Amino acid sequence: MISAKYAPKPNPEIPKKWNAKNTNLNTNNCNTICIPWWKKFDDPVLNDLIQKGLQCNNDIHTAVANVEAAQGELKRVKYNWIPGLDSLLGYSSFPYLGYPGSIALLIPTYTINVFKQIKEQQNAKHELAVTKNMRDTVRLAVVAQIAGSYFQYQAQVERLILLKNIEADLSKKVNIYQATYQTGLTSDIELVRAKNKLELIKSEEKVIEQNIVVAQNMLRYLINENPKEFKFPTKFSDLNPHQEIIGSLPFNIIENRPDMQKATNELKAANAKVGIAAYSFLPTIQLSAARGDIGIVPYSTTLGTNVYFNQALFQTSLIKLSLFGEFEKSHGVAKAYYAKYLDTFRKVLRDINNDLSANELYTERLDHTINAQNDLIKNYSLHSSLYNEGIISALKLLNEKIKLDEVKITLNEHKTEQLITIVNLYQDLAVGYGCT
Figure 1 (cartoon, rainbow, N blue to C red):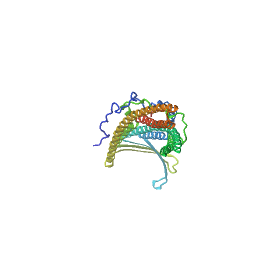
Figure 2 (cartoon, rainbow, N blue to C red; figure 1 turned 135 degrees about the vertical axis):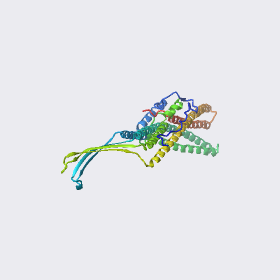
Figure 3 (cartoon, rainbow, N blue to C red; figure 1 turned 90 degrees about the vertical axis):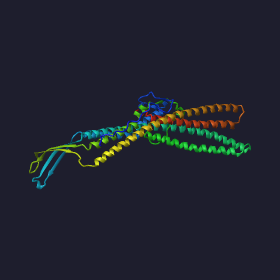
Figure 4 (cartoon, rainbow, N blue to C red; figure 1 turned 180 degrees about the vertical axis):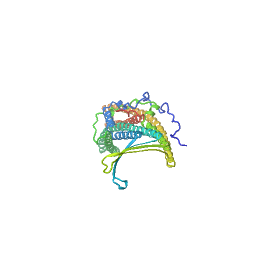
């Protein structure tokens, strides 16, 4: 039996709340697509980068152009309701026609299959909606990429400074061991260990320098600029990782996510194509008429003899088995898009719950690392007092300083990862892509 639409199973149940725990999440927001979450960091540099990205990014320009193309396709389908108008101008000197002559005709034509035309227009509307959803997806991704690259860049700059501090402390340690080894107070084992650690730190610095180049070039690319070094007044330590997360309940997020909207509109478009294939079996009416003049002999310099003829056709396919194949194809495509819709739905819930959990746990880990750093700061202060009183050696104090430097690097790493969880969470919550 041929049906004009594909009727899938009932839509999946949307949970009333998120399964993952996150004490930072505020779900009292309904329309989050126009909230610029990045401004909560109070960083003018980040604000400016994202503003430039939304205005200048080439991926966004491409997506906007695709929307314009889809709008043109919708207009083309709408204009199919308007009859066409052809013209015919000719001259003949063929002797068997009797006399040479000229002819001028206007031929309006109209071909219509009402139900098929309606479905084609519905399909074009849904295809336009899909391109708009793709544009919004790109905007959401660009915001996340700029924020993530900016955080990575700032983190790598700070990490390089911290590594330089460790390098300086390890160089002092090497000098101390060289002096004690030469005087016979220590063996060369400690000296070799210190040198080995110093070389590893120097090698890591080269990797970080390359990471800085990659991050700044990525930022330039995202805002459609050529590679060039950045000079930012903001430091990584100025970024506050303890942020309230702007969110909403699952139902609102499902409604706002552009990939979910895209999956929905793709399914609607596929359903419309089922209708197009089904209504191809219905009759098509073709109407045409011609009005014009034929030239007056012998020289046909003027037109004077009227020409009238009409045409009305009622066309339907009696034997065109390929239509059955087209119908089955459209039905199969609709089933595939429904499966894609379900897959997108499950991924949305999976990713958001993963991100909520990651943000909660990575924030707790960051807090523990901050506490560890504070303890080592107190410890180093106590050892400094002991050193000033002559109770411990400079080498002992230096070892405590290196421990503090190392935990600062760990803190840098943990803070970076926690900030990235914020970026990922906002991207999956579909916050901010509607900002202009």
